Structures are given as structure tokens and as C-alpha cells.
Image 1 (tube, rainbow, N blue to C red):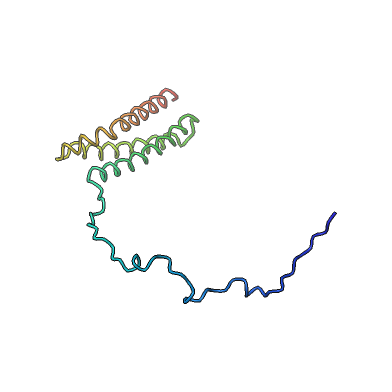
Image 2: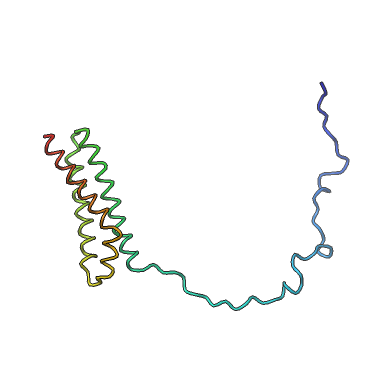
Length: 143
């Protein structure tokens, strides 16, 4: 078996990586490209979010909160814990807040915005509403 040998360099480490003097360094770009001005670019305004997107985001945040409360209440109801009733009440309150925000937007003065919001988030709200009602019925049958 061969033993490992360390190779000894005769040059000091500082001599391995030395900066190249500016007089020797080559420019990265050709001189004609370095001084050429940038072309005139017409700037367009940054994309702004529409009112519809803002309203949908507000409703989606409220939906996420209501759904979280529903999931907690559903789990507690399934386990029939002492906290189940309070959690169902919290889920119902968040769902009511969601309905209020949704209804306010749908029935607002801008019918086009209301229709877009109805198409984009209406189904999920109806599904969550049905799930909460179903959970409440299951809880009534458990008692």
C-alpha cells in the first residue's frame, strides 16, 4: 500500500492569485458597445391590481378564516369534545362574516364586478355553507 504524500509547493501562497494590472486587463465589451447609449424604451405603468382582484382577495382571506374555523369545529364535533359547541359557534360567526362580505360585493353598485366575483368564488362559499349546515345537523343528532 502506498502512503499518501503531501506535495510541497515552492511558491508562496500569495503568488497564486494576484490581481491583473488594469493596463493588461482586457475590457469585457468592445469599446463601441461600452459607450453606446441605451435605446429609448417607453415605460408602461406597472400592472395594477383591479378592484375585482382586491375584493376577491378580501373574500378569499375571509373564506380561509371561515374554513379554518370549520375544520377545527368539525374535528371537535367528530370527537364530541367539550369545546365542540364553542368551535361550531365560532365557525358559524366566521361564515356569517364571509356571507356579509360576499353579499355586500355581489349586491353593490358595480354589477359587472359582482358577477365576476360570483363566478370566481361563489361555488366555494356555497360548499362551505353546506358543510357547516351539515356539521350543525350532525351535532344536533349527537346530543
